[in-house]
Image 1 (cartoon, rainbow over the protein chains, first blue to last red):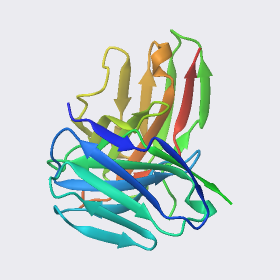
Image 2: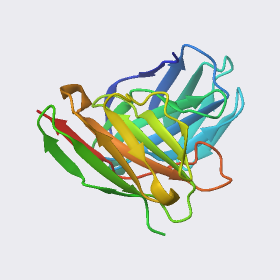
Image 3: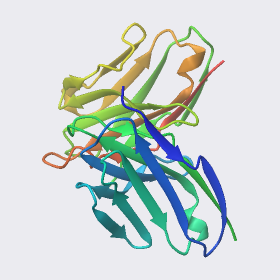
Length: 110
Length: 115
């Protein structure tokens, strides 16, 4: 079945730093999604990407849909303490089922 | 607008016991999903309902898991009997009619510990 690999698994950064994380797939997707999950809560959709090469921003977050359709990247600029949480990538090929990565845990040092 | 409600928030049971989780989706949302999220992993879809009909239950372990959505509103997920590997957070999500597949609103989840 489809598998998504996210890296890094976790990161500890200084407040104000930029953050980069990525997600790779064993197969192509037509839609890439990025979610954030806070402790004790469900995931919340941050960004949706629909086309290879697409670059989309949401505030300090920027995500890109890789040209090969097998990867995606998320960048967070000028991190703040409330950015802590788990970031999940997810993909779908036919728009009928989401496949999630294992997540990147973000911890911010204030 | 109230979000997706789930109860209980936490449950601890012994293996071979039974357990049930309840989900109340956002009002008017026709599509309802149950996901299993094992610690350190992303959510995995167990079952999808459209109104009170099952759309996809291909990843539901049907020998022990069952789910229903009577009247197309609330839903219940049951595990009988539970195994140690069922320890996870069970997330319910709902989606408004006519919106993209991925525009799902997740509830806070029920954390199940099987001892």
